[in-house]
Image (cartoon, helix red, strand yellow):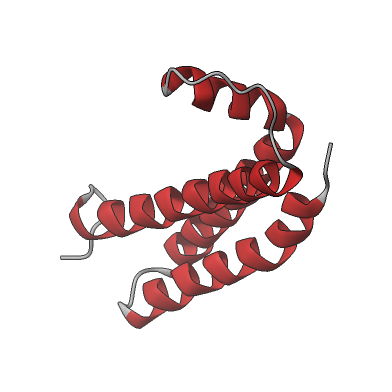
Length: 110
């Protein structure tokens, strides 16, 4: 188990949360909503990197099964990039989810 995704999460998750918080403040959303949205995005981002760390080989195996390609030998660099990509994808989905719900969801500003 490699810990590099956790180290990357220590930098990426706060940046994603700060961007969400800054965007929510810029659009004059309530302080409570700003804090909640930034917290959810930060925890989701960190959770994505944590899941990549804990379930890394299983995720990689499932990815190759979806592609119908046998994974006989995986290079360490390939495994590392796939784990980081998984964490970044979860972060991007969390930020996208914030963007959609804050603009079009039930809590959108009028």
